Length: 403
Ligand code: FEO
Image (cartoon, rainbow, N blue to C red; front, side, top):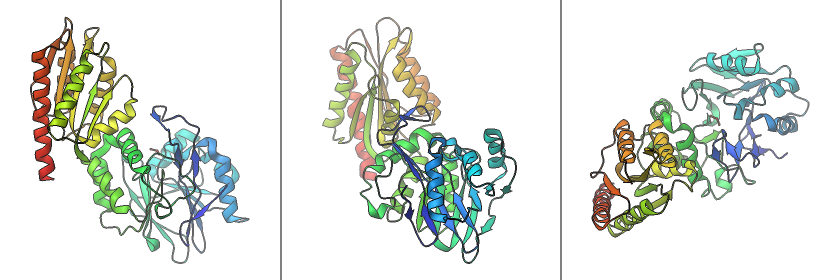
């Protein structure tokens, strides 16, 4: 087990998971994921900050022993109770019986419920501090719903280090290096968009509250629970979380999500893509909802300003793979997008109606009337589809010129 010294007081003791195929049973992990954990050493006390998932308990305990030798950790600070970080807490307590579990009232209640742990706990409130001796002080800031109601962050004052929980995290295991200055971070940024939009995306207003609350803190290092430790790219990372949580797109491109059983709706999607390109839009994602995992579709929709949804009616309802996408964006309260819908049918126009209902629920305003076609795309419906996409391209170019 390799541990990494982050600073004079802080060691990285996290683990990689390259085995789990789907995070939370839903989100693909082609690059794996890391469960980050840290040790902070004061002159008198030692605190572990954040734990790991249950299957990695032995690795985690070995890492702690490697750093502390005969000494024992005094505290386990739980910033977030989701089991990817708390799953190994019972094993940790068995390995280090004296360890005191630190959390807010809700953390400790969750800890009782999940693991039956009800002793040797220390309850903290917003703004409380935990001195570790000498010039090493942890301060706790409650940041509810980033990503569960009990979430908080821990700030090591003397080093301006923020242990941020899930905030500023991303998918992707750590390939040797831990700190952003020691690696090429390019692979992590798309995985950050996917991580945020898939998992935290519904809670944008709470992320905004947390960002405002932490605004006054000088932050020199971000130690989140997933992905690299951020030191040289803090501004970029905070900017991505800020924009996504304000539901602002990251670019003025467009996503076309379509479902198609026999290729007719696909022709409409291709027609729209060509019209967008002819209109000068350079970032265009055309995605077959039956083919691509919804995790990636959600991320692309959050990334681009434009969104065209195209689908046929199926069994008198919206084609199910596209309905799942609509459900996902409605759940996350998508805002600030230029949208349009295209619906195909043979005898019932339910697809268009359902897509319109989802868009109304999100309070998004379409750029053009819905494009409806019956049986196969005919010249008039193809022209209407191209016209709708050309109008979207015009609006996206205006946004690009303004932005
Ligand atoms: Fe990484 Fe919300 O747990």
